[in-house]
Length: 345
Image 1: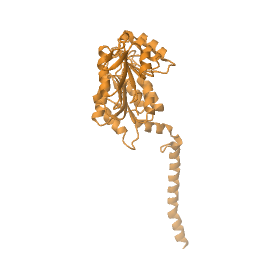
Image 2 (image 1 turned 90 degrees about the horizontal axis):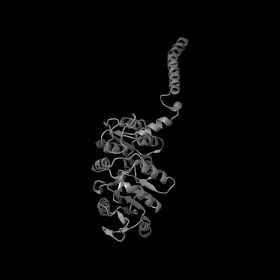
Image 3 (image 1 turned 90 degrees about the vertical axis):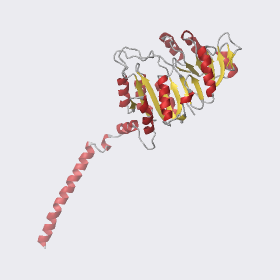
Image 4 (image 1 turned 60 degrees about the vertical axis):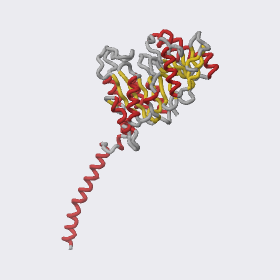
Protein backbone atom coordinates (compact mmCIF):
# COMPACT_ATOMS: atom_id res chain seq x y z
CA UNK A 1 0.00 0.00 0.00
CA UNK A 2 0.95 3.68 -0.27
CA UNK A 3 -0.52 7.14 0.16
CA UNK A 4 -2.47 8.92 -2.62
CA UNK A 5 -0.79 7.13 -5.55
CA UNK A 6 0.12 3.53 -6.34
CA UNK A 7 0.17 0.93 -9.07
CA UNK A 8 -3.43 1.68 -9.98
CA UNK A 9 -2.79 5.39 -10.63
CA UNK A 10 -3.58 6.44 -14.20
CA UNK A 11 -2.00 9.80 -14.95
CA UNK A 12 -3.15 12.55 -17.31
CA UNK A 13 -0.63 15.29 -18.16
CA UNK A 14 -1.98 18.81 -18.73
CA UNK A 15 0.50 20.69 -20.89
CA UNK A 16 2.11 17.52 -22.24
CA UNK A 17 3.28 19.13 -25.51
CA UNK A 18 5.27 21.84 -23.74
CA UNK A 19 8.96 21.59 -22.88
CA UNK A 20 8.48 20.70 -19.19
CA UNK A 21 5.42 18.54 -19.76
CA UNK A 22 7.13 16.46 -22.43
CA UNK A 23 10.39 16.09 -20.49
CA UNK A 24 8.77 14.95 -17.24
CA UNK A 25 6.28 12.71 -19.03
CA UNK A 26 9.31 10.77 -20.28
CA UNK A 27 10.64 10.57 -16.74
CA UNK A 28 7.35 9.28 -15.35
CA UNK A 29 7.07 6.65 -18.09
CA UNK A 30 10.65 5.51 -17.47
CA UNK A 31 9.85 5.03 -13.80
CA UNK A 32 6.87 2.81 -14.66
CA UNK A 33 4.03 5.27 -14.07
CA UNK A 34 0.91 4.64 -16.13
CA UNK A 35 0.66 7.87 -18.13
CA UNK A 36 -2.49 7.29 -20.18
CA UNK A 37 -3.27 10.70 -21.68
CA UNK A 38 -2.12 14.23 -22.30
CA UNK A 39 -4.11 17.43 -22.85
CA UNK A 40 -3.22 20.47 -24.93
CA UNK A 41 -6.11 22.38 -26.56
CA UNK A 42 -5.84 22.34 -30.35
CA UNK A 43 -3.40 19.43 -30.50
CA UNK A 44 -5.76 16.47 -30.30
CA UNK A 45 -4.59 13.44 -32.24
CA UNK A 46 -0.90 14.01 -31.60
CA UNK A 47 1.24 11.67 -29.52
CA UNK A 48 4.03 12.50 -27.08
CA UNK A 49 6.22 9.52 -26.16
CA UNK A 50 3.36 7.35 -27.51
CA UNK A 51 0.88 9.00 -25.11
CA UNK A 52 -2.30 10.21 -26.91
CA UNK A 53 -3.12 13.93 -26.73
CA UNK A 54 -6.67 15.26 -26.33
CA UNK A 55 -8.26 18.69 -26.59
CA UNK A 56 -9.93 18.58 -23.15
CA UNK A 57 -9.56 16.85 -19.79
CA UNK A 58 -13.15 15.67 -19.91
CA UNK A 59 -12.59 13.85 -23.19
CA UNK A 60 -9.32 12.35 -21.97
CA UNK A 61 -10.91 11.05 -18.77
CA UNK A 62 -13.86 9.50 -20.61
CA UNK A 63 -11.60 7.68 -23.09
CA UNK A 64 -8.71 6.59 -20.85
CA UNK A 65 -10.06 6.36 -17.29
CA UNK A 66 -7.43 8.74 -15.91
CA UNK A 67 -7.75 9.24 -12.13
CA UNK A 68 -4.87 11.68 -11.52
CA UNK A 69 -3.81 14.87 -13.29
CA UNK A 70 -0.42 16.55 -13.21
CA UNK A 71 -0.21 20.14 -14.43
CA UNK A 72 2.77 21.64 -16.33
CA UNK A 73 1.32 24.86 -17.72
CA UNK A 74 2.35 28.53 -17.38
CA UNK A 75 1.24 30.31 -14.20
CA UNK A 76 -1.32 32.41 -16.07
CA UNK A 77 -3.15 29.25 -17.23
CA UNK A 78 -2.75 27.15 -14.08
CA UNK A 79 -5.95 28.27 -12.35
CA UNK A 80 -8.13 27.25 -15.31
CA UNK A 81 -6.22 23.98 -15.64
CA UNK A 82 -7.02 23.15 -12.00
CA UNK A 83 -10.69 24.02 -12.49
CA UNK A 84 -10.91 21.84 -15.61
CA UNK A 85 -9.35 18.83 -13.87
CA UNK A 86 -11.62 19.13 -10.83
CA UNK A 87 -14.75 19.63 -12.97
CA UNK A 88 -13.88 16.49 -14.95
CA UNK A 89 -14.08 14.38 -11.80
CA UNK A 90 -10.38 13.68 -11.27
CA UNK A 91 -9.86 12.90 -7.54
CA UNK A 92 -6.15 13.89 -7.37
CA UNK A 93 -4.73 17.01 -9.05
CA UNK A 94 -1.01 17.75 -8.76
CA UNK A 95 0.03 21.26 -9.82
CA UNK A 96 3.74 21.62 -10.51
CA UNK A 97 3.46 25.17 -11.94
CA UNK A 98 5.10 27.96 -9.95
CA UNK A 99 4.53 31.71 -9.84
CA UNK A 100 0.74 31.47 -9.58
CA UNK A 101 -0.67 34.72 -8.10
CA UNK A 102 -1.87 34.43 -4.50
CA UNK A 103 -5.27 35.83 -5.51
CA UNK A 104 -5.72 33.00 -8.02
CA UNK A 105 -5.01 30.45 -5.30
CA UNK A 106 -7.43 32.14 -2.89
CA UNK A 107 -10.13 31.60 -5.50
CA UNK A 108 -9.01 28.01 -6.13
CA UNK A 109 -9.10 27.23 -2.39
CA UNK A 110 -12.65 28.55 -2.16
CA UNK A 111 -13.65 26.59 -5.27
CA UNK A 112 -12.24 23.31 -3.89
CA UNK A 113 -14.32 23.43 -0.71
CA UNK A 114 -17.00 20.77 -0.71
CA UNK A 115 -15.65 19.04 -3.82
CA UNK A 116 -14.37 15.48 -3.77
CA UNK A 117 -10.93 16.25 -5.13
CA UNK A 118 -7.52 16.80 -3.58
CA UNK A 119 -5.06 19.37 -4.86
CA UNK A 120 -1.33 18.95 -4.23
CA UNK A 121 0.67 22.13 -4.83
CA UNK A 122 1.10 24.46 -6.57
CA UNK A 123 4.83 25.12 -6.82
CA UNK A 124 5.63 21.58 -5.70
CA UNK A 125 7.70 18.62 -6.95
CA UNK A 126 4.77 16.20 -6.76
CA UNK A 127 4.96 12.81 -5.08
CA UNK A 128 6.38 9.34 -5.48
CA UNK A 129 5.59 5.93 -4.03
CA UNK A 130 8.86 4.00 -4.53
CA UNK A 131 8.55 1.04 -6.85
CA UNK A 132 4.94 1.87 -7.69
CA UNK A 133 4.29 5.27 -9.22
CA UNK A 134 5.74 8.75 -9.67
CA UNK A 135 3.69 11.88 -10.37
CA UNK A 136 5.69 15.06 -10.88
CA UNK A 137 9.39 15.80 -11.06
CA UNK A 138 10.98 13.88 -8.17
CA UNK A 139 14.00 11.80 -9.24
CA UNK A 140 13.20 8.11 -9.01
CA UNK A 141 16.85 7.09 -8.63
CA UNK A 142 17.14 8.28 -5.01
CA UNK A 143 14.15 6.48 -3.48
CA UNK A 144 13.80 3.01 -2.03
CA UNK A 145 10.65 1.10 -0.99
CA UNK A 146 10.16 1.08 2.76
CA UNK A 147 8.10 2.32 5.69
CA UNK A 148 9.08 5.97 6.19
CA UNK A 149 6.64 8.61 4.97
CA UNK A 150 8.18 11.94 3.95
CA UNK A 151 6.28 15.24 3.68
CA UNK A 152 7.96 18.55 2.90
CA UNK A 153 7.35 22.15 1.90
CA UNK A 154 10.64 22.21 0.01
CA UNK A 155 11.41 20.38 -3.22
CA UNK A 156 15.18 20.01 -3.37
CA UNK A 157 15.43 19.59 0.40
CA UNK A 158 13.06 16.64 0.02
CA UNK A 159 15.52 15.04 -2.38
CA UNK A 160 18.39 15.60 0.05
CA UNK A 161 16.55 14.00 2.98
CA UNK A 162 15.23 11.09 0.91
CA UNK A 163 18.75 10.35 -0.35
CA UNK A 164 20.07 10.45 3.22
CA UNK A 165 17.37 7.95 4.27
CA UNK A 166 18.07 5.65 1.31
CA UNK A 167 21.82 5.65 2.00
CA UNK A 168 21.06 4.66 5.60
CA UNK A 169 18.93 1.72 4.42
CA UNK A 170 15.64 3.39 5.41
CA UNK A 171 13.15 3.05 2.56
CA UNK A 172 10.09 5.21 2.00
CA UNK A 173 6.37 4.45 1.64
CA UNK A 174 5.46 7.74 -0.08
CA UNK A 175 7.37 11.01 -0.46
CA UNK A 176 5.45 14.21 -1.17
CA UNK A 177 6.31 17.86 -1.59
CA UNK A 178 3.25 19.93 -0.70
CA UNK A 179 4.64 23.20 -2.09
CA UNK A 180 6.11 26.36 -0.66
CA UNK A 181 3.49 28.95 -1.65
CA UNK A 182 1.40 30.77 0.99
CA UNK A 183 -1.74 28.90 -0.13
CA UNK A 184 -1.51 25.22 -1.08
CA UNK A 185 -4.10 22.51 -1.59
CA UNK A 186 -2.66 19.96 0.84
CA UNK A 187 -1.09 20.88 4.18
CA UNK A 188 1.07 19.05 6.71
CA UNK A 189 -1.98 18.16 8.81
CA UNK A 190 -3.65 16.47 5.83
CA UNK A 191 -0.63 14.31 5.08
CA UNK A 192 -0.04 13.41 8.73
CA UNK A 193 -3.61 12.08 8.93
CA UNK A 194 -3.09 10.02 5.75
CA UNK A 195 0.22 8.58 6.98
CA UNK A 196 -1.38 7.75 10.34
CA UNK A 197 -4.01 5.65 8.55
CA UNK A 198 -1.57 3.99 6.14
CA UNK A 199 -0.49 0.51 7.34
CA UNK A 200 2.64 0.63 5.15
CA UNK A 201 3.97 3.72 6.96
CA UNK A 202 5.69 3.16 10.32
CA UNK A 203 7.38 6.57 10.83
CA UNK A 204 7.11 10.08 9.41
CA UNK A 205 9.68 12.72 8.44
CA UNK A 206 8.30 16.28 8.35
CA UNK A 207 10.41 18.95 6.63
CA UNK A 208 9.20 22.48 7.33
CA UNK A 209 10.57 25.93 6.71
CA UNK A 210 10.15 29.50 7.91
CA UNK A 211 6.94 31.43 7.27
CA UNK A 212 3.29 30.70 7.95
CA UNK A 213 1.90 28.54 10.74
CA UNK A 214 1.62 25.14 9.07
CA UNK A 215 4.34 23.60 11.24
CA UNK A 216 2.75 24.88 14.45
CA UNK A 217 -0.60 23.37 13.41
CA UNK A 218 1.15 20.09 12.60
CA UNK A 219 2.85 19.99 16.02
CA UNK A 220 -0.53 20.42 17.71
CA UNK A 221 -2.08 17.62 15.63
CA UNK A 222 0.82 15.26 16.32
CA UNK A 223 0.54 15.96 20.03
CA UNK A 224 -3.19 15.18 20.02
CA UNK A 225 -3.74 12.48 17.41
CA UNK A 226 -0.65 10.95 15.75
CA UNK A 227 0.61 7.73 17.30
CA UNK A 228 3.44 6.97 14.86
CA UNK A 229 6.92 8.39 15.53
CA UNK A 230 7.63 11.72 13.81
CA UNK A 231 10.98 13.44 13.22
CA UNK A 232 11.01 17.09 12.15
CA UNK A 233 13.43 19.47 10.49
CA UNK A 234 12.90 23.21 9.94
CA UNK A 235 14.82 25.02 7.20
CA UNK A 236 15.78 28.68 7.46
CA UNK A 237 17.31 28.70 10.93
CA UNK A 238 19.61 31.58 10.00
CA UNK A 239 17.16 33.51 7.80
CA UNK A 240 16.93 37.27 8.54
CA UNK A 241 13.45 38.66 9.34
CA UNK A 242 11.55 40.22 6.44
CA UNK A 243 13.60 38.55 3.68
CA UNK A 244 11.97 35.94 1.47
CA UNK A 245 14.03 32.77 1.20
CA UNK A 246 13.28 30.99 -2.08
CA UNK A 247 9.58 30.23 -1.74
CA UNK A 248 6.81 32.82 -1.68
CA UNK A 249 5.70 31.48 1.70
CA UNK A 250 9.19 31.31 3.22
CA UNK A 251 9.35 34.68 4.92
CA UNK A 252 9.45 35.74 8.57
CA UNK A 253 7.01 38.61 9.06
CA UNK A 254 6.04 40.53 12.17
CA UNK A 255 8.38 38.43 14.31
CA UNK A 256 6.35 35.25 13.72
CA UNK A 257 7.05 32.20 11.63
CA UNK A 258 10.70 31.87 12.65
CA UNK A 259 12.52 28.56 12.59
CA UNK A 260 13.19 28.84 16.33
CA UNK A 261 9.46 29.19 17.10
CA UNK A 262 8.57 26.20 14.95
CA UNK A 263 11.31 24.04 16.44
CA UNK A 264 10.16 24.98 19.94
CA UNK A 265 6.58 23.90 19.14
CA UNK A 266 7.78 20.53 17.90
CA UNK A 267 9.96 20.00 20.95
CA UNK A 268 7.09 20.94 23.29
CA UNK A 269 5.03 18.22 21.60
CA UNK A 270 7.79 15.66 22.24
CA UNK A 271 8.91 15.50 18.60
CA UNK A 272 12.66 15.07 17.94
CA UNK A 273 13.98 17.96 15.83
CA UNK A 274 17.04 17.51 13.65
CA UNK A 275 19.44 20.45 13.46
CA UNK A 276 20.72 19.33 10.06
CA UNK A 277 19.26 16.96 7.43
CA UNK A 278 22.06 14.46 8.06
CA UNK A 279 20.73 13.85 11.59
CA UNK A 280 17.33 12.67 10.33
CA UNK A 281 18.22 9.02 9.47
CA UNK A 282 19.71 8.45 12.92
CA UNK A 283 16.65 9.88 14.67
CA UNK A 284 14.29 7.80 12.52
CA UNK A 285 16.31 4.62 13.08
CA UNK A 286 16.23 5.26 16.82
CA UNK A 287 12.46 5.84 16.77
CA UNK A 288 11.89 2.58 14.86
CA UNK A 289 13.88 0.37 17.26
CA UNK A 290 11.67 -2.46 18.63
CA UNK A 291 10.41 -1.78 22.13
CA UNK A 292 11.65 1.79 22.15
CA UNK A 293 9.12 4.41 23.20
CA UNK A 294 9.28 7.76 21.49
CA UNK A 295 9.47 11.03 23.42
CA UNK A 296 5.91 11.68 22.31
CA UNK A 297 4.67 8.41 23.84
CA UNK A 298 6.49 9.10 27.10
CA UNK A 299 5.11 12.64 27.21
CA UNK A 300 1.56 11.39 26.70
CA UNK A 301 1.83 8.64 29.31
CA UNK A 302 3.17 11.13 31.85
CA UNK A 303 0.36 13.59 31.21
CA UNK A 304 -2.28 10.86 31.21
CA UNK A 305 -1.30 9.46 34.64
CA UNK A 306 -3.27 10.40 37.73
CA UNK A 307 -1.28 12.47 40.23
CA UNK A 308 -2.21 10.18 43.13
CA UNK A 309 -0.68 7.19 41.39
CA UNK A 310 2.64 8.70 40.43
CA UNK A 311 5.60 7.21 42.29
CA UNK A 312 6.79 10.64 43.31
CA UNK A 313 3.43 12.08 44.35
CA UNK A 314 2.97 13.81 47.70
CA UNK A 315 0.35 11.27 48.73
CA UNK A 316 2.65 8.31 48.16
CA UNK A 317 5.47 10.09 49.98
CA UNK A 318 3.24 10.68 53.01
CA UNK A 319 2.24 7.03 53.05
CA UNK A 320 5.85 5.90 52.70
CA UNK A 321 6.98 8.22 55.48
CA UNK A 322 4.38 6.99 58.01
CA UNK A 323 5.22 3.37 57.22
CA UNK A 324 8.91 4.00 57.90
CA UNK A 325 8.13 5.70 61.19
CA UNK A 326 6.02 2.75 62.37
CA UNK A 327 8.82 0.35 61.50
CA UNK A 328 11.37 2.40 63.45
CA UNK A 329 9.03 2.64 66.50
CA UNK A 330 8.49 -1.11 66.54
CA UNK A 331 12.19 -1.81 66.24
CA UNK A 332 12.95 0.45 69.22
CA UNK A 333 10.43 -1.37 71.50
CA UNK A 334 11.82 -4.82 70.84
CA UNK A 335 15.02 -4.47 72.97
CA UNK A 336 13.02 -3.08 75.92
CA UNK A 337 10.58 -6.00 75.82
CA UNK A 338 13.43 -8.48 75.80
CA UNK A 339 15.04 -6.79 78.84
CA UNK A 340 11.73 -6.94 80.76
CA UNK A 341 11.41 -10.66 80.06
CA UNK A 342 14.93 -11.23 81.36
CA UNK A 343 14.20 -9.32 84.59
CA UNK A 344 11.07 -11.38 85.11
CA UNK A 345 13.06 -14.54 84.90
